[in-house]
Image 1 (cartoon, rainbow, N blue to C red):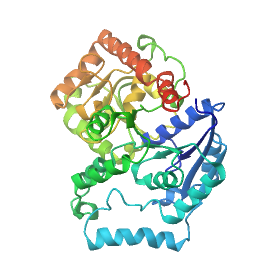
Image 2: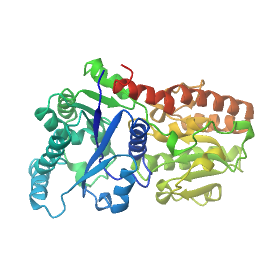
Image 3: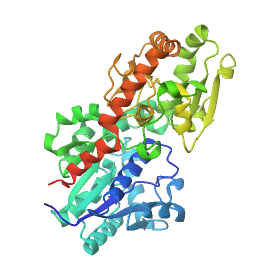
Image 4: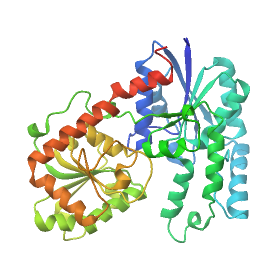
Length: 420
């Protein structure tokens, strides 16, 4: 039995406000560590600034982290010209000279000075585990592993990095730099798998990505871990569907990412008019920063409520009859759907939306890529209260069995060998 587990968790950016799936995942993992304080000593590591100025760790951000960990070590690369020169030389070489995206195995995000900082921390604290977020930061783990083969490095990929880059290139504007840069998918996937081979466990949140990686990595290296989201909303079972007071008929929640914007526009232009034709009083609520990028046309604007970013979505979920997720592209597990499951909302989604989750068409969700059928199935749930209530009960049961804190904490206990 392993004793005295000393965890160093790498944070890729501040997690407040909690307005995206990766931030929700971070909070979930930190809450798990906090709940196991008797078994773990946990410190955190990050750097400031990141690529974007709004990812600089403020004093308040650092205080937020210290609510979960004993110490938070921030490497401040600001005004360190060698770091800037090192990273920018890579973008110059690959993007400007070779005309291609940075390869997946680039250490652009983990400069030699940042790695020396992490090594120094490990020498002082002798961590037993390193929890990394995103493959782009894997060189931190490889460096500590090279120095201390006994440290266990767990890489939470969030999404398959090669697939993410391919999707971003596909969604990029026609004349943008990203669209013009070459990207060799097969070569980068080969490099990404090679990096994953060097860590102890590769943590994935999507069943689809798990199936993909099972063909490329030993099964004992892979670990499926759903998002932990219960801390974001209700801690107890929400009111039964039949006991709720509804203000909205339909609900969509999302950040301002291109995938969400495209999904909402697709729904407003191709699906919602079909619903309003048969049910003119239908009200759609759109929550999250995606609201700022949406402008419904005059014919439907009175049936759309743009709520913007809502810090606590609990009441919005409980006041909505049906959750829609008409995503046409994207990867990984959709946290918005897990939240809908937590509140027992009947779900209508696409194959992309349902991917990676334990959703089965006609059993616990309604899944279709056809705009006409999407509208019909949404109307069925709005017109048939008993049917909606049945789906509500089924989806909440799935959440409790597979995605609740109790279920996921048990999986994490297994990963960290707490029961052995």
